[in-house]
Image 1 (tube, protein in one colour):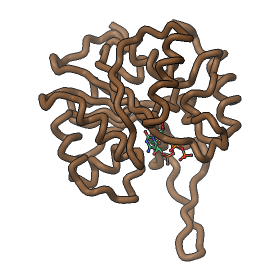
Image 2 (cartoon, protein in one colour):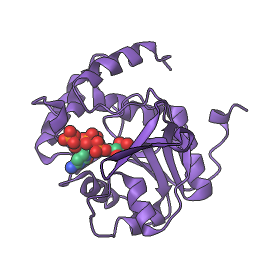
Image 3 (cartoon, protein in one colour):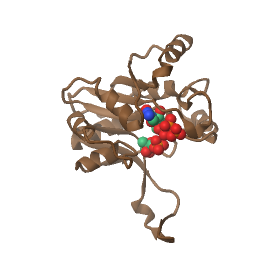
Image 4 (cartoon, protein in one colour):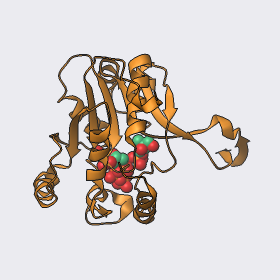
Length: 237
Ligand SMILES: Nc1ccn([C@@H]2O[C@H](COP(=O)(O)OP(=O)(O)OP(=O)(O)O)[C@@H](O)[C@H]2O)c(=O)n1
Ligand SMILES: C[C@](O)(CO)[C@H](O)COP(=O)(O)O
């Protein structure tokens, strides 16, 4: 059986918290980047569709800024978007947005993926592999090996690092619910740049699963053009 078709080896419920609560300041667009058009559809819809196409069929929780709930309802009508999901309001940082999403999931064991809304090119296979790894190990963080040489700058001096030991972290980041909930009870720390850093600070080991260099995060204006090109080369399901 191809790896993406191996049955998900757990009876635990599957969820995804898609965080779209940010304002996209680095994108310099008045409309937050999660709503910009990619291949004729809002970025966010691509991300939700990837999870709907995954074998895991997770319950989808969408975190949106308070001011954009009614705009999202308009988009749903306009694009006849009918993938079921629950809506929740975002927080001050990504950390707080994830916490708000977690509050919506019943207090039972489950597997929970956290996904940046602005990584619309994530594939269903990557999503399913991460759920499988989290079912086995409790943690699964999607990452790719650096393709560039890496140097670290400390006290004005740069030193080379061993490239094969450096991974670039993407989403989804998937965890057993009991672990993720406990980790997110910690007070906020500015070094929490993702879910892995929160869970690691709580004391758990982070397992990596294979990502893809095309699973980019739309952060700067040029990223939309790059995503358009990558989307045009992606095999359609
Ligand atoms: N308060 C926040 C901040 C970010 N995010 C989400 O976290 C993901 C990754 O964050 P990033 O790319 O930094 O998005 P923004 O915070 O919107 O961008 P910027 O930092 O440029 O303002 C995005 O899907 C974003 O919507 C969120 O849900 N709530
Ligand atoms: C979660 C993340 O996308 C993993 O690469 C990243 O850490 C988000 O960082 P940002 O500072 O919110 O762009």
